[in-house]
Image 1 (cartoon, each protein chain N blue to C red):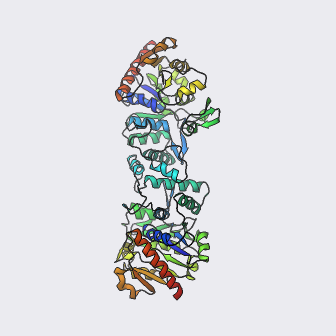
Image 2 (cartoon, rainbow over the protein chains, first blue to last red; image 1 turned 180 degrees about the vertical axis):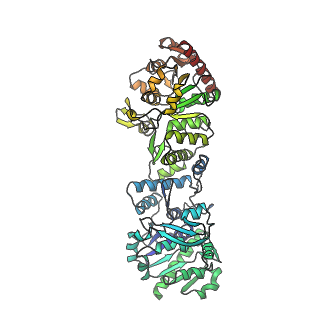
Image 3 (cartoon, helix red, strand yellow; image 1 turned 90 degrees about the horizontal axis):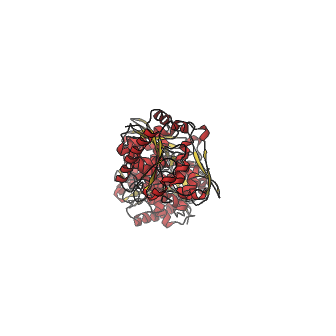
Length: 310
Length: 310
């Protein structure tokens, strides 16, 4: 079985990541995670994409909400609101403990990678979650209302401002996580999970050395756009605002030159012929754990096929 | 009606303070509160006595537990434990928000006094809660197991070490809260609430200028010891370890020279003759709100009598 790097952002990507963790043992897959939407709030280091993946792999993700942790409560943030503090970022009580623990570990000298390893181990996760970098990279969303820190755009302003572009502050000074670099040096291929291309995957691809490392490898991407809509999040809205069609084809074109295979949903089967790479048409909507496992198996098998044709 | 300063520590004193807040309008009583057991935990400024009083005056105190806030939950601290973090200090989820809000306000430049005013106002409290000082004073408990920070002695080690003495670090450089100084300059008398003499009241009395300001005024104290036991907390255990009888009389002697009147429980009526000051014997056990109000009325009336006899 080849060693596979899975690139993922938040909730959407984490569904496929859980599937991959069920079909590949922990030494055969590594999850490389976007940290561009990390931020500091209440003096805590918050890493939303790492946490979404952590909760997903621990099977502790909140199925009712579609984000956050299972069995979550909101006493902290509701009390904060009563006391006149900021409450736009809905920090759950359990989630708060994770951010506090991470911040403590990092203040004691741990890197984000090391803090993540400690926390995921405590939650019983054996697979490796590698933050894309231990250096701060912060996604700035340029909009008709000015430049916005990612969480201001995404949570506080509910993705309402019209997007004009993106910037990854700190990128030039950031190094790719050596864990990822080392893994890629002995890797059979890469799966880009169905995450937002602009704010979840691009920050990772933009890291110095990342594209060069990927060029030697078979890379497949799974479309986060199905039937012209994003399963979750603002990807489709962003595409429209950036004057791109909100389609699986446009996502495939966005990754052109990088990918050797593209997975799109059966709903979009008609687009397969427009896509400038090998395609696999299948069900990509992952409602159940079985869906996640099935898609993961298909991706691993498709990546193998792309490898052979590469 | 005279203006009264009430000196209080945590839960026991806060019961009488609530009674006083029901019988005196907000411009006629000020609560001077011990901050010697404040500490920093998870990078948050925690002020247990201020918070006990805040929750009591907001009538949000937890009646089941006897400490903390009503309707509290423990998701944060239980998750912290799961993640391998410190969990000996049982921070509730709502309580956590108060500490976070205070820390935020203070990081933005507010004094502890100003932060307390903002928080108590947000909770609908009109009476003034004055931290004894805006400067850090930290109670150190000397024990047979060495010198312990107060919360380590009190919470982590459950008051088990044998006490040999107390130290108030930072006292020499601390100023009495000017709010308290100004109030005392135009004040009819002082009530020492039934709080621990050694670790709740003494730090306040030891502040530079405090004893001198009190000497001109009638001061009464309410015994925190009833029938040889502390209603709450380690006062009686401490007295035994310090080779004092655990009795109301010993408390009155501890305050000798400062107080002109002493309130003791009917249980201890036989001790009244031993006490070297005017006494008032009454029910001091405050189980209900009515008990709190009745004792407050008695104290205000007794303080008036002490004033006349002064």
